[in-house]
Length: 89
Image (cartoon, rainbow, N blue to C red; front, side, top):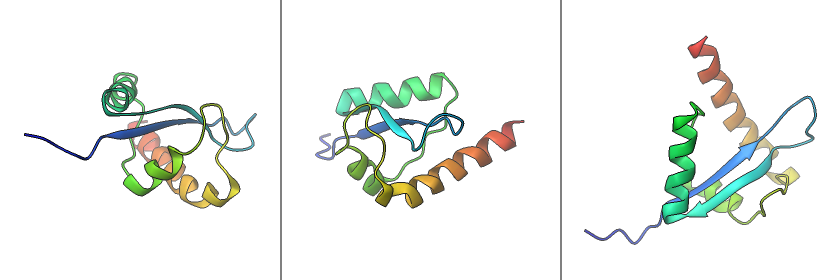
């Protein structure tokens, strides 16, 4: 079975005490994307699935902060993660 749609993943890091905006810490396609997702799951880091956002984030370089234009959508992701963290407590 062939799937022409390659998996895409981007990992973000954000520390509200020291960072102005989230930054890209890892990104990749195919096997690299699967490894990023697996590492997140192994470390109990929530995985948020949004193909459009992933495509936009894939255009950023590792170490680059997200641009202002993406603040709102990434804020939604951070709220999602915060809700998951609160449920685990």
